[in-house]
Structures are given as C-alpha cells and as structure tokens.
Image: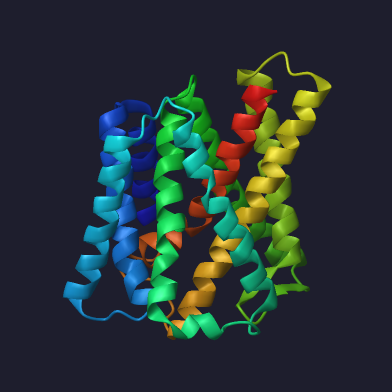
Length: 269
C-alpha cells in the first residue's frame, strides 16, 4: 500500500509541478532524508536532528538563490558528488577495512552534503531540460527497474553474495538482473520516445543504463553500511513496510549525478 502511494506521488511531482514547486517537493524529501541521516551517524536527540535538517535547508536555499539552473555552473556543481561516490565505492568494497573515519560523527554527517545536495541539484537540473518529464521518469524507472530485476534475479539465481559483510541479502545475480531490466527499459524509452538514435547513441544509452544501476547499488550498500555501523535495521519508521525515506531514495541519490553526467555529455557530443 505504501508503494502504491509513493510511486504515483513522485510521478505527479514530475509531470504536474512547475520548477519552483518541484524544487520545494524534492527539498522536502531531502530534508526528511537529512533528519534520518543524522540518526544513522549517531545523533539521537530531536533538536540535533532538526538542526541537521535546518542546515541542509539553508544549503539548498543558498544554492537556489546564487546559482542559475540554466548556467553551466549548476550541472558542474551537481557533478561534484561523483567524487564522493567514488570514495564510497572504495569504502563499501574494502569494508570492514579502512573504517576509522566511521568513528567520527562529524565526518559521517558531512557525507550527507554530496549525497542529498547532489540528489536535489541533479533532479532540479533535469526538471529544467527539454523533455524533462521523460528524463525524470526515465531515471526513476531505471532505479525502480533495477530493484525489481535484482529482486527476481537474486531469488532465482542468487548464490554468489555481492557484499556479505555489508548487506548479506544482495547478490551478483541481482546486480546483473537489475542491469538487464534497466537496459530493457532504456531500449523501450529510446524506441518510442527518442527516435533516430545512431549506433553511437544506442551504445551510449546502454552505458547510461549500466552505469546508473552500478552506482545505485553503491548508494544502497553505503546506507546499509551506515545502518550496520549504527546497529539499526531501517533509517526510520516513517513509511510502513518500507522503513525510512532514505531506504527508498538511497539508490536514487547515487544514480542521479551519474545520469546527469551521462546526459550532459550526450548533449555536448
């Protein structure tokens, strides 16, 4: 029932909200995510967690006021979080080694800036592109399709674990199933809505799909790592049967900057 509400709500925001309303809508999601993130890194008091959310709100307001979404600066800033996600990939792969920094709440807290800031800036930039509804829906379907493909492939063929020390339930078969589902989604979107693709365009399309799925897995695993480090199962209990908001957007937070990068490059070349 929760999923039946969440998916149409997101699609309604994509198709019906104007730019200003969409910025507020995604910002509210990011602020709830910040409130949950503060719990993941060890802040238990409500006042502290509200302070973290207020800090993120201030950051988004500053970005909204001083950076023009139609300038080159906006997509370039929204791509900076990719550096963080490369580091997160190393952290996930090497876990439980090199985790000394996880003992610092302030260092862990600082990671929400690239995670949620990149999430907000990337989606807002896509909202201001031609065919924005198509691009945003495409991104959502890639992430959702990867989850669905991973679930069924993992159930059917999941013997080899992906990162057992971080998230025992995830398998390599799930990754491959997620990639296959997302590539199929991209092919369908291109066939019906983006005609005239050259061979180079089709290859780039498949690269976008594979890269988005690969990094979305890192987003999911990094949140799992923080939860394991904190000793909790869900980021919160806000969404019945789904845990917290972060549990729903962790993959999307990682996937958004990659999708922006690849679409930006596709526009340039």
